[in-house]
Length: 165
Image (cartoon, rainbow, N blue to C red):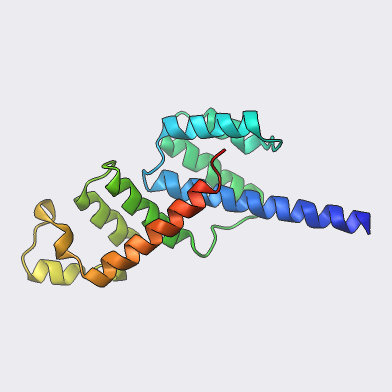
């Protein structure tokens, strides 16, 4: 019975780590989490937690956001994990947070969201209305789309806050 408890504990611990890695990937890919902030977060995790998984030190030593994402992708592949089904929603939420913190502009937010989920933004309507991407405003988006994106950003922020130490 104790052995089963140990296996359950390890499985739960690995699922939590898999979730953490997905949150980190989405926050980095969206440009919400900078390399400097990633380093600080990894340092805190290494110092303040008992989890000494190698990915934390690898990410702490990442040389760029692109390098950090490669480390995460390799970890997911090596451990036979997957990007979780809500990854895309979390990514879009983090994109909006990056926009709110002025890490990306509205044009970049629009293009990033369109790349991830082409159906979320009516690109053709914007073109039909002769709206240039350089002059795009929040009011050019459907209000329901904005509300959906804001909801995703709230959920993404909640996920991110769950990993801060």
